[in-house]
Structure formats: structure tokens, C-alpha cells
Image 1: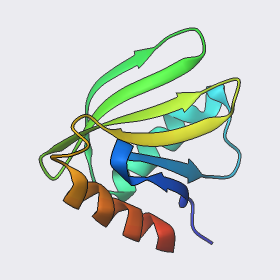
Image 2: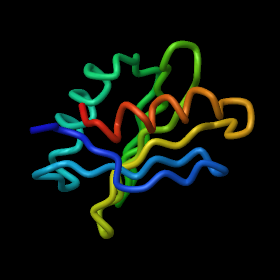
Image 3: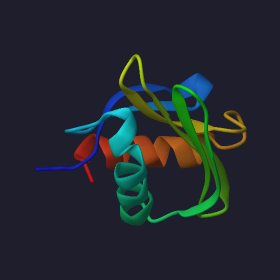
Image 4: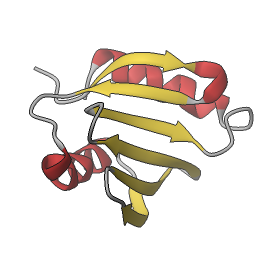
Length: 100
């Protein structure tokens, strides 16, 4: 079974909402690292606020946010430049539909 699946793709916004098992705020560092490994991508910067984790990652030269929000229990990828990065986010959406 896939560890990460695409739940919803908001193409114009460059947002990919993901499904994964056993996600909660405290498990995000482990899950985020695993997703980054599977893509593969590289973490550039990490930030943790009261209820949201935000990581800046690089996937093949495209910068994305990997975010996880506590109260909504949502994990998502978000393009910094949705219009410019549409080809990359379309590609990621296709592979995440199949699952990682």
C-alpha cells in the first residue's frame, strides 16, 4: 500500500492535498522526511509554528512548500510559483495519484 496518495489537486493554485496514515502534528517530522525521500527532494528550510509545520523543499529545481496543519490534520504540497511550476505540479499530481 502506498504511503502517500493524492486526495485533491488544486492545479491553478499549485496545491496537492495528500493522504497518509497515522498523521498527526507530532508524527510530521518523520512523515515529512519520508515523503521528501520518496519524491526525491531536498529540504532547504524547516519552520514549526504553534499549529503548522512548513518546510521549503526543492524538487528537481522547483521550490515547494510541504505543509502540515495540526487542527485540520492536513498534509499538502504547495508551489511557490503556481503558474511557472504548473508542469512540475502536474507531474507530481500524476505520480501521487498512483501513490508513493
